[in-house]
Length: 315
Ligand code: ADP
Ligand code: MG
Image 1 (cartoon, helix red, strand yellow):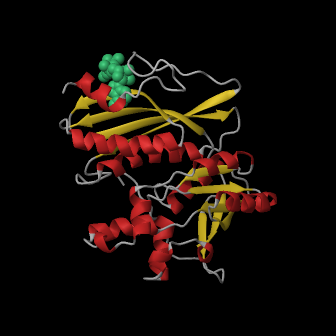
Image 2 (cartoon, rainbow, N blue to C red):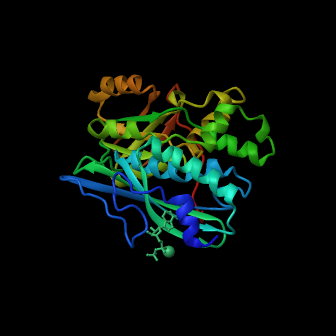
Image 3 (cartoon, rainbow, N blue to C red):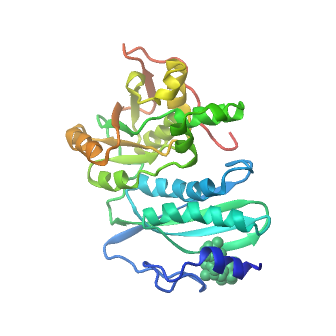
């Protein structure tokens, strides 16, 4: 099977709703929205670095798009389309079937259509560029946090990074199904991000660990922050093992794809109501302060002496 037959068979699903020309021309054409901005983001996943060679191709298809949708969610953008660049060592039809099944299942769920891409032979690597709409000026940026804002996080944290460690240690088979699902099929917080447009002052998605990602917000917003470790919604699966380790994973572990956001205290009840409406736990874990550093303290207000480090490539 050649390149064009492969594209036709696995990636071309006919004219897209947002792009009636469909794929196959030199560029995709998408209608612009009046008074709108387009949020765009891309992520590169490389075998051996971001996933294991024996990963389920359906999970990989899901995750490759999910991580991009999570970035759109963190900007409050509404996903509409994506480009897929893929490098494949060989044409493995069963692999491609499963990969596209996982990919298109999540794409369809979020109304995000494949607009085009690039296909080549080479080591297994996948890069997706995703696009979303956001009304002009409404995007949730990293630089909007203000002193006295509350600091919030969605969902439960710490579990996925702990689960990765368990896999490396050869104990992956003993992981609870809930965690395996969160790790392999993360659900981007797209609806939450869109609903926060008028409630949050700043947001970021948790991909490299809470302290590292909060570090980006305080740097861009030129503020400091205070985190109450006893308020962290740590994954119950790790708390059962050790509460202290659970807190370390919650502070530094990556792969969460939850939203960390700041909001003025007067929005508290609206945010709590939003969490109930969406069925997503939203937890207040601290506040923004004047300054330029992050302080983590325990329930009695004692500062944590040593802060665990977040993930960085080339770090
Ligand atoms: P060009 O030569 O203009 O770069 P290609 O020959 O690489 O175009 O691709 C032909 C068409 O197929 C283009 O419209 C491109 O967007 C689309 N395409 C190629 N690979 C993919 C893919 N993996 N997913 C979706 N569309 C793809
Ligand atoms: Mg090409």
